Image (tube, rainbow, N blue to C red; front, side, top):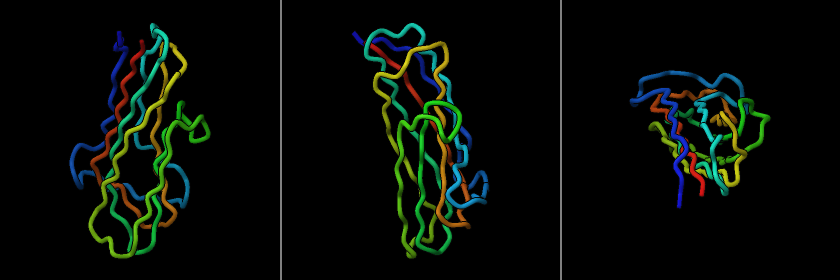
Length: 140
């Protein structure tokens, strides 16, 4: 039988156009959200399901946006999920990127940290909201 362990949300911006955070360094991960899940009393087959959303205003150029989720607090920690979305020159409106990811057989402990980062391969990208990062820990 599945055992619910914990659920946490990092809600940086709840509404469209509620923030204006420029990405100022090319290909440098910028923190978007961070959660800590209690997995101390996990049974076998610990799983963490992760979801995230970020909205961006893009420059008028061919652009790649990368979303990365790590188990830890630093961009160099173990990557759990990574995806790159490429946008073309025709994109004028803000773009929303959403994802679902899973960390199977994650280590159990009193506080398992997950961090969501965004990076851009071109200057001129602005984080405009909404931004949300959620994780749920379950085990058998």
